[in-house]
Image 1 (tube, rainbow, N blue to C red):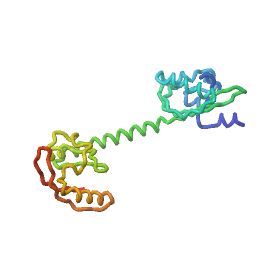
Image 2 (image 1 turned 30 degrees about the horizontal axis):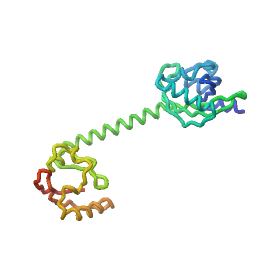
Image 3 (image 1 turned 45 degrees about the horizontal axis):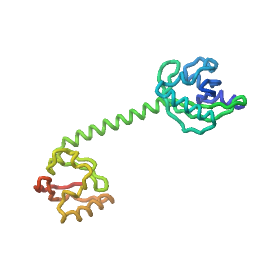
Image 4 (image 1 turned 90 degrees about the horizontal axis):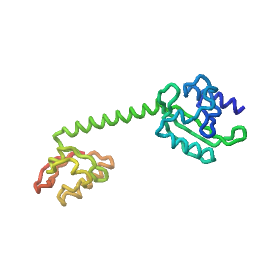
Length: 219
């Protein structure tokens, strides 16, 4: 019964000992680009790995063979077709014909990984475009978290008398206000963070060169 479940499983499965394939199911043969499971018998699992992870793969298989539980791993697999695949590997201790062995499930996640990489690249491109747009604005733009500045454009730096936008990062957003205005500004920030909509307000900011500048702040 278990042999039938093994052979009919749509998930590629391999039973190995000392990194040598003893038994594979048809799904594994398809993943590996072999004509049948029999064509894979006796093959080294390391033949399907890349050189960069060969030692790690050996250590993983030896650990499982000795009875250890290991977390799932993501590896590149090189099937007989030569095309690199991204696979998720789940390996567990197994007993085959009365002797310790390793049962490994190899799930093809190539398309999933490609989609995730595309999403990251698209998000990075969108962020770069947004940053280029914001940096080109004549108005000062800042972003702060818990009153700490984490982003500022070049115009914000220019307004405050700083040579670079990076010089604003990590500073308190209220630092450039005169002490008499800080309490009211802090109250306004708390209201905005709570979801309130507040009209723009005028503040006099203290520049780093000792000058002062009147600005309208919208948040």
